[in-house]
Image 1 (cartoon, helix red, strand yellow):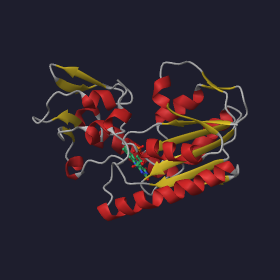
Image 2 (cartoon, helix red, strand yellow):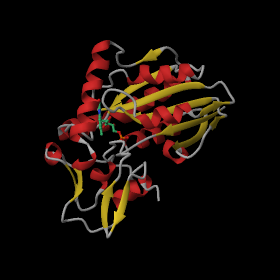
Image 3 (cartoon, rainbow, N blue to C red):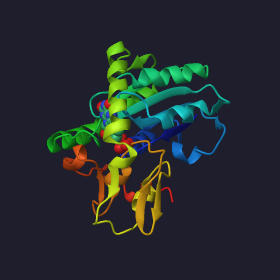
Image 4 (cartoon, rainbow, N blue to C red):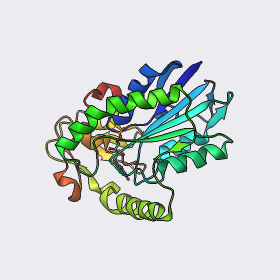
Length: 257
Ligand SMILES: Cc1cc2nc3c(=O)[nH]c(=O)nc-3n(C[C@H](O)[C@H](O)[C@H](O)COP(=O)(O)O)c2cc1C
């Protein structure tokens, strides 16, 4: 049996979890970034075990993940699992993923929400450390469940209140907190271009040595968190936010060239 884990990640939590899971799966295989496939029309699924690991955004799944799944062409009928890394509020994201897969005639068997340090709302440092410590053990347990091909388990809730909150938060995020105008380089910017390189959707151009944000931001906040001189600002509300990335993930891991 072979496996493939597709991940999407802004600050490394989902990549680190994908790598740890892959080490513990009996079905060996690879860990692959979803954004590598942005220009593909179809993506063949030819493994017996298929996984998706991604962050929760506004209590649902990132649009990048939805469009990735729409492109899948199933050659095999794999056992499918998902891990949604989050900051305590997974909402209905795993149910939404399940519905996306149902449209392709496939079933999400296992959907787990895993609390990790947050990269938007501030998580207290002691909580960040505790979650990171605990995550190894939880990932080992998730791997055990995947190896045993557990079925019919989803974290979160698909209730109307989750959908309503998600709608409100995503509108607030897209139109106020994280709109195009919120992103700027401060005078500390050294023009290194790392923000451009870590942007998973190529939304940053460098003009005259300065980053310029374009129109297709997915709000992963990689540009803010990976800037080596803390020169990316994201509006006033975000001014107190500290930088975060998963300690086992380096800027090189996130570099899409
Ligand atoms: C724009 C945005 C919205 C988020 N919304 C939620 C949310 O609704 N619920 C939650 O628990 N975490 C939320 N988070 C936190 C991330 O899901 C969490 O930190 C995740 O582990 C980050 O994964 P990554 O490091 O792979 O990018 C949000 C993060 C961002 C950037």
